[in-house]
Each structure stands twice: as structure tokens, then as C-alpha cells.
Length: 620
Image (cartoon, rainbow, N blue to C red; front, side, top):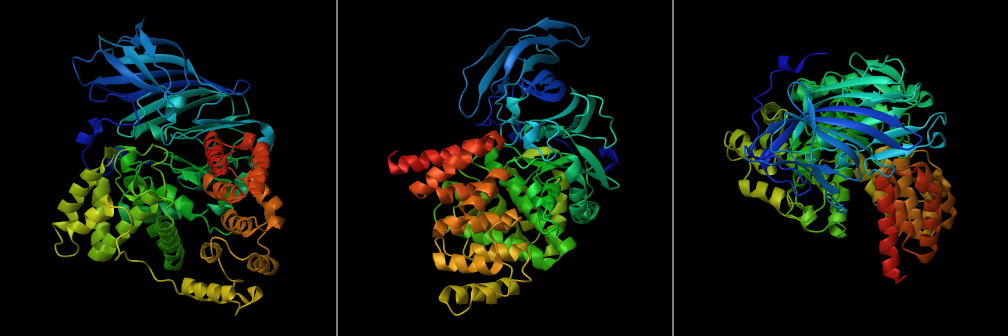
């Protein structure tokens, strides 16, 4: 473990944009900034709440400032006090505004004396949007309850009162108490051999934005996977997870060889229960991951490459606002592809790039993404959660692949390594990134690409017509087989699918008509037995097509998939397929009634929105 000061990164001067107003936060960083958080938490499983004490260290920017404004959502505030340099406390007056549906409640604390620290005693509610509480029966081993957080995008405010904006970075220390036999982990340095004595301490010495604040507690075992990595998971899962992720050290070394030293010390992985709503969350030092990655053949480990890549793009260099989230996700998806290519081969990296590009093209063609949301840097009007769509991931990485092609890999690698070093531990906006791009890539290598093309990629909807795509002979062959099968000249059992990997099955299914003929769906299933597949990526695509085709025989297996998996990306397409018919809508509502308690609040919200839209469309 190397201390950060030993690494050769650039100066930490705050960018101008760090003081710009964030439309998704009440914070006023031009007046005062939180620089450090001391957090004391008690995990209360019976009441599904965290009892907390947050001490915020403050850096006053405006000598005329009269208050500290924080973001909260559904927090119960018990007391607020100032803490002076000697540790003496005094009560402070405060006002908690009515709750806004998206932003939560503005907490205004009267601080005319500009205290060095402010301490807030509070508790969370069982329905906190950034926490999920699972009873033992909803875990893999069914022995102990489980709790985990998901702070991105603006849900940290539901379990800690703070300045909940990616423009504001802070270090933190935490002390957490929990029932004995429960392990607590956080987005900080963790100890795999920590005794389960109910008493845990954590330190995050590097400044992070609030959305990277994370906690989990439950029946968690740990198994080392390398000199600076370990897998954490429930005891029955940890062995399988350690095997799936045994290449972690190789992935870290590959990323370091491309983009410079790994700055965070350790890179550990926590495999969560199936209700986790995302594939992975790049919490520093402790990536949170879905168990749907554990398919036994490492074919989905690119999600881990993605979360690891965030250690450079996102965690090290962070978007200053949710409008700029492509600086996190587009750069990370590009780096993910480079790591995947280096460790698992160019064929797999190209296949994954093509799947994402074709999916994005289809979404744009089908008009499922509004024109403004197709921009890498959209105009105002998009919510924080809504900003995290396929556009910043797939269009952003496509843009960077275009830059690599135009300027050459060696030149672009050197540029990107310098970019990460220059902006290390800073939050920046799109315009700062573009200014650095022009000065350090375009101006130094003239004639490779016009600046108008860059403007089109970043500020215009859609995909530029000359956007480059990799060639995949295996995908080309699948295109021909799919066309022959749909035309009736190739039987389903004659498809050359025995050797197809996960990505090739994904590509085959993605290319089927939105509503395929029922007899074709039946033929595929009879030949290849996709119903009941344990591979959730294949299952999501298969069930969506089968439901759309009217194959009611798959409904029970689809319901099992929807109940077992809470990951939004793998569950929502099935709900959307079901609600297109009155009978399907009724069935999906029955499934949801049984599955709801095992879903994360974000998943519940998304499913209920699909139902509401469907009922509105039918006039119900």
C-alpha cells in the first residue's frame, strides 16, 4: 500500500467550476465548503435505521456568509451544534424546509460566527432512498439481515446530512457499531481479517464526492484475491466470487500500465444480494457488485473492469455536475474496453463495443431517448438519476474511440494518462475537459480531426455519421445466420451456436425483430433451451422477446427471473414487455406484488412508473 503523496500526480488547485451552482443540490460552496466528515453510526436492524452523528469540518469562503446549507432527504434531526477549535460545543438554530420530490429537504443552519465544525445528530427512516434493509430470508444464506447503500446519484443525503454535489470533495473517518457477527464495510480502507466484534473504524484519506460514500453490513465473509484485493460476500457466495474475480490483480496492473499508478491502495469487491439495482458501483476501495456477474466463465467480468477503471475516471477525475456525467462513464467505458482487450483479447473488447454501439443506435432510432438526452453535455432539464443513461456510457466511449483512431493509440494513451494526472482528485466540467483536450491533443497534433467534429459529438443529439466501429467477423457471421433463420432457410437447431459466448448470444438476440414471430421463438427455445437460463444477460433478452411474441409458456420462468434479480438493467425490460398487453400488465402486477419487498427503492420506483404509464395509456 503506497501513500498518495508518493505518486506523481498534478497540483490540486480547485477548478473554477467547483464553485458553480449545482441544480441538484441546495449547497452553497461559494460560501462554505465541507472538507472532512467525521461519521459515527449505529446500525439498527430491528428499526431499519441508522442512528448518526455527522461532524463536518468547514472551510469558509465568504466572510459575509450567515449560514451553512446542507442537503437532506427524510432525515430526523435531533440536534445541531457548533464545535470550536478546543472542542467546545454550542447549540445552533436551524430550519428544515419542506421536502422536494427530487431534491429532498434544504437544511439551513444559522452560523454567523463561522464555526470550524458543525455536528448534527440524526437518524434515517426505513424508507431512505439510499439504503436497503433486507431481512435474512432475502439474503443468499438466510441467516442474518443485510443493509447496503446506493448513494449515486443524489441519495447520500438520505443517510448523511451533507453537501450532496459531485463538485464538493471531502475526506472522511467513520466509526460504526453493529450487532456482533455482522461485518460492516465502507468505501474506505477495509480489513479482511477484522474481528466481528460489532465495532468498526474506517478512514478515507483521499477527497471524494458524496455519491461515493458507501456502507454495507451483514453476514459477510472475505477472501483474498491478490496482494491488494479481496472479495467480500456472504459465506456461501464468497468462494465462487473469488474464483470469478481471480484476475483482479492482473486487471489493476493492466490499468496502471496504461494510465498511471492506482491511487487508492486497495481494490476490494463486495458481492451484494440480488436486489442491488446496478451491475456495479465504483465506491472507492470497495466496489459494490451484483451477483448476476457470477456465471462461472468470467464472461461478464468486464463490469469489474469498468468499476476498476472508475478508479481513474470518476473517482480520481470527477464530473462536477450530473450534466457532465459522461466524463465519468464515457471515459470509464473506454478504459474498460482497453483493460478487457489487454487481459481477455481484442475479439471480446470489440464485441462488447459493438453491442453497446448498436444498442445506442437502436434507442436513438426508436426515439426512446429524447434529443436533449442524446447530447453528451445536455441542456438543463434532466434529473440527476435520469442523467445516468446509456448515452454518457456508450456515446461517450464511442467519442473517445474516435479520438484514439484519429490521433493514434500511442498519442491518445499519453494524452489520457496526462489528463488523469493533471486533474487528479478534482471535479471538473465538460468545458474544462474540452479546453485541456484542445491544448494538449488537438493543438499539439494538428490536422487529425476538426474541432467542429468534437462540438458535434459533445453538444449535438445523435451519433455523427462517420463514427468508427470495430469489425467483428463472428458478429458478421451471426448476422447472416440470423437473417437466414428468420427467412426460413436455416433451422434453429442448425445455428452454429454451440460455441457462442455470452456476448454472441446477446448480439443474436439483440438483432431479432422487436416482435418476432411466435413460431420462430418456439423454434429457438426448442433447439437451445433458453428458458430457465442461469445467465441473466441472456435471460433478460430472451424473455423480453418471448413475451413480446406472445409466448405465455415463458411467463413463469420470466417471473422467476424478475423476482430473483433486482438489477434495473436486467429486470425493467421484462416489465416493459409485459405491460404492452392488458393480460401481461395484470400478470406483471402480480409478480411485482411478490417481488417488491426484495427490490431496492430505486427499482420499486422504476417499476411503479412503468405501471403508471401503462395504465394511463389504457385509460385505467
